[in-house]
Image (spheres, rainbow, N blue to C red):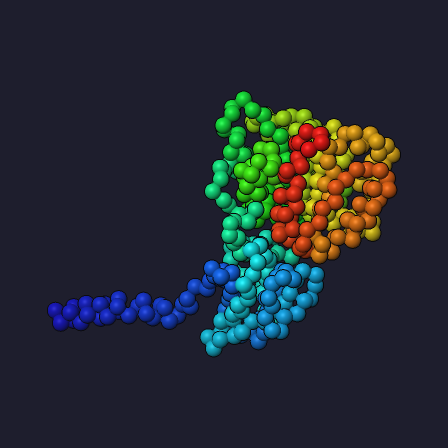
Length: 389
């Protein structure tokens, strides 16, 4: 009996002390980045064995920088963090302007994402962590108290490869209000290493469209976002052509069979960023029988010394007047600090000298979502408008 009492007392003591023991063994969860109401932002990472930890971020020229900051490339600043005795590194910056920002840690020279932050852009070989500094009122790309649409995920078997792919389809709030109406479609492509969810997850396509709709600045449209990261070099012409066959043979039939859309060239636009920009530019201009609106953001192909417009789009420059009659819009966009900016200037110059009508748009930023969101917000009001608007 005494042994049983002792055992019971021991268990009571153990139950009382176990949470404290576990707390000592397990560090407190890290909040990073921590965006305060005054727009100051604190980065945190636990690296007790590191001797130096830096934050590399797209801070923007107008934001305050801490002592020791180095501008190491266009649009990017590297800032030192401070280490506490328990191995937690911290850095507070700001207040920052309302905007979206990207960053990564450099731990003793090794690049790392912020594991405390789930907002991650794959972005090919250089992934980034992202955070938002909210606006008051909310920025153009933030969710506002306006009517909202929905995003559908549709799976299909690729005709050529038999792979299972998924396409994300944004449906505007107006779609269910008038069951007789038909809607134009924007086919919108992601960048290398990303997925069909890139534009909806980090590109905020729904918020941008819905805020523009609420302000009566754009037409309601479906936005179709397929998976386009073809195996191998997805920017090479054979890969772009293969993606085009998937788009025309698999994706577009789903959209035009299952949704009330305008199934003609004047009801279709095509656009993309980075890798997807090259796809949209090439497929759009090669298929003016299918698309009257063509746009690209930050295509890397234009910066390549191997880029030849005649190879990319055969015959484009032979009859500029015919091209201009068919094209409602050729929209070219890039961040002013993007390494692809000079290549865009060369292309715009070539198109102008050749007599191909186009609109060239720039926005502050590097090769990042900040720039692409702004460019999308500039593009959408221009799509599917009558001549002269």
